[in-house]
Image 1: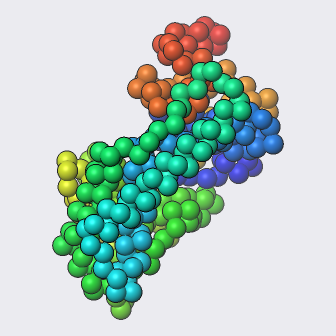
Image 2: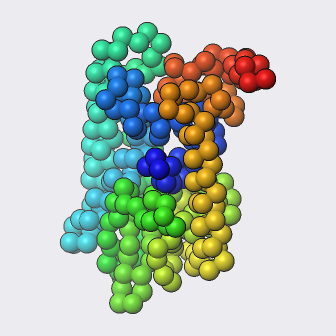
Length: 298
């Protein structure tokens, strides 16, 4: 069985739901056609992130470094927090610009990517969010009373034969007490969303409290969750169903990488920041492309 068909992550599911075609390009063709020029190009394009996303990534990197230093007795000042965040953010922007410079070799005149400079307002937003989390009473209390271990975002777990990616950021322990901590940089849409995320994080663990720090409306919200057996069973079923849908979509492509039957995006909004929009028939007129596809399938 194709390896991608047995891998699950929230990012992949979100992309598949918003645009099955982008999902197939990113996790199908780009991932397994690296020796082909088009596959190489797709991988490079998908590695490019917007400055806003780079800011989010830099927040997580700053918090991880802060926790590591805090554990050995090194406490950062606000100015040092800002400095550290800016260093991470500027490094990420530099990496992004370097990739874009290399892509010029493709001579694609329709590329939507341009080199950028670190934006001051994003540096201010990112540093502010770091400071607010680091100074949060709940977060400070956990740091002062428990031992933290950073968890790699690339760490996976096998659930019913499916490789699942949805790791916490930290595991905090004290004696027999153990909690998993997740920093949700994109907020949350509902309490159900928070509970579902807690169930995903808890997979493969036993009787661990899930603590999520979620940014919304200018502040960090805290949610503590103890996942029940019923919720655990429900999330496993959801992963199985999602995995089957991914398999179905990828099978439509076939051995010749035919995308004619792969649906387009759910809305034009999903196309706005798509990394491979220049390759898509719907790049300018989504509804027209959908209509043409329906006509071909009739």
